[in-house]
Length: 471
Length: 70
Image (tube, rainbow over all chains, first blue to last red; front, top):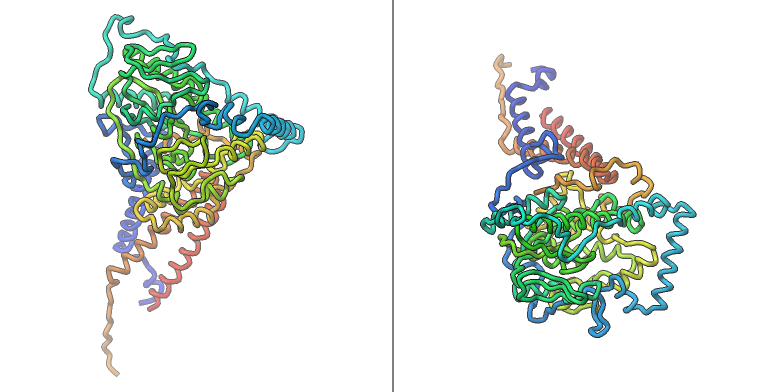
């Protein structure tokens, strides 16, 4: 037999190779079906496979009875969002920051912040140029938002009908369908009980007290927002941020995706409140940004994600690139359970965010702890608590929101490459590989800060996000 | 000298086909990641995946050549 004949591929071999090739593609596609099975991966319409509209999630996202964050409900108290001198507690957002660092230091940092922003415009510093800062301002524009909602939609009675009725599963499904259509990434539901009510702020950022009452209807006074006890459900939802944009943090350019998510939230909240009103139910929302409830905590209880070393929620689908929000309602809905996707476990070994944090505000502890880092943390859960004052101080120093921790997180991926799904699945089932995955994440250059001027040359999808990621 | 030849034809064992299947899948996997990394605007990852693809291709070629000439 000559060499020429020897090298000929027989028909049998050819068919075998084709079989193997098809098998290889099929196995890969199984990890990311939308890439291979959809002619246009950016649009893939499906029917809900669950009566409550719960999304079909990757197999490595397991539903569990208790969240991966330990909670001691007996130690948890309702927390005030706005700083209250009489309690000595509150978040560092808004006026709270000055309370923690003092007026003099606050003024000094504000001057520094203004100088950095001015210098950025004068010297065309990438990410700080006039166009970058103009975009931040543009995306900071918000629709009016309120606790009670716009209240302009016709009620069922005004339309000559009666309120919508259905099973809790149907209620959850129509809310999910409607909110997804409004631009929401994920939606979950939590029942308000003796424990979960502790995740509703005691005082809103504007100082108004949030009070549960036996009133039939919600109302608002000069000093209080009254929540009827019949509002038994929390709708918790996420809105995506642009991972590609956040990778330009910490700059005004990187910041504006956060502003855009908040802007979109104001539209979604108002629309959802009006939708609920149109169905004959109440929808109680945030009166300002970061009001009403500790949204990430509700997100964790509803299984939208897990807590993390960032002390923020990380979702299996979008990593930390989401903002979470809450609306309370009396529409009966099927509630959801927490998840375990190996995220909190991964955070134990990774620490990439803590290493990247410019001020060391994030925890380097191996294990989450019950001990808080200051009165800006809410005790009662075991977490990687952060030093929020250090974090906020840095924001002033760079003249903008930061976001480094979000952008370097190994869960912040666009999920186009099959490897990401494999790594997330691998991490979930084989946590001993987490250290290796972290090293590979560094080696492959993920999480590196990107060129701000390049951003203005990118043809990104709507809102700079990929809504085909799931669900 | 005998005028008869004995030609022994050995069928490739099943595990060899399996190994080639794994190799091919690895190549498909790496190419997908390389192409997708470009879409994801991750140039370093893209480069590393292409390098891995070329290295594995060469390794496969060498092994195939050596097996063929046995």
